[in-house]
Length: 315
Ligand code: NAD
Image (cartoon, rainbow, N blue to C red; front, side, top):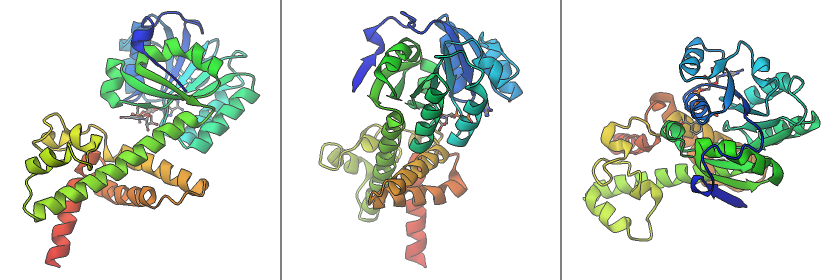
C-alpha cells in the first residue's frame, strides 16, 4: 500500500498520462471534480445525458460532447463517476472499443467489488488500463479538491493516475489490485454505519436513563466507547456544533447513500461467506429508514431509534 497527499507533489503537476481527459457523469460529485480538473489546466471532454449537468460543465469550462463515446475518444484518461455498477459496465461496453489503445480508465463511482473487478478485466482485455478509485469526502470534498481516493489496480497505472487524482483529492491511497479500492470503501462505510447505529442506541438508552447528551459526550469521547461518529459527527445537537444534527439533519452524507453502500457491503459479505451479522443488520436498518427519510443525513438514524423506542414503550 502506498499513500500520497497533495503536499507530496505540485497540484496538477507532472502529467505522466498527458493532459487529455474524458469525464462521464457530471452529477453532485462529478461536476465539481471535473471543474477542478479544468481549473488545473487539463483538457476535459465531458458527457452527461442530463441537460442541466451539461450546462453546468460548460460554465465550468469543460468541452461538453453529445455522446459517451465522444468523451472517451483520443483521451489519455477516462474518468467515470456514475450511480451504479451496472451502468459502469454498460458504459464501458461502449467506450472500450472506441478508446485509443492503452487509455487509462479510472472509475470513481462506488460499485460492487465484483463489478469493479469485471470492469477492470474487460478494460485490460480490450487493451487498456484500469483503476477503481472510489472516494470519500462528499460533495464538499469534491468541490474543495480534498477527496480521499481509495485505489485498486496495477502500481504503474496508479503512479500514472496520481497527478490527476491529486487535483481532485487531498489523500490518494493505493490499496491493492483491481477491486480493492472498492473493498476499502465498503469496509469503511460498513463500519461507519454499524458504529452510528450502535452510538445512537447508546444515546437513546442514556436519554431514558437520565443521562444528558453533553454528559454522555464528555465521558464517552474519552472512554473506550469513543468513535469518529461521536467525536466528529455527533448525531444529537450540541456537543459537536458542526455535525448535521445541529442543522436539522441536512446532509452531510445522505441516508440514501449510506443505504446504498451498506447494500454493497452486505452483498460482499454474502459473496465471500463472511459471518457479518452486524453489517447485514445495519443494511436492513438503513434500508427501512431510507424508505421514509432517505434525504436526511444518515446520523438521523438516532431519531428513528428514539421514535420507534417510544412507540414500543406505549404499545
Ligand atoms: P448523481 O446521481 O448526482 O450523479 C450521477 C450522474 O451520472 C448524473 O448526473 C447522471 O445523469 C449521470 N449519468 C447517468 N448515466 C450516464 C451515462 N451513461 N453517461 C454519463 N453520465 C451518466 O450521483 P453522485 O452523488 O454524483 O454520486 C456518483 C457516485 O459517487 C455514486 O456511485 C456514489 O455512490 C458515489 N459517491 C457519492 C458521494 C456523495 O456524497 N454524493 C460520496 C462518495 C461517493
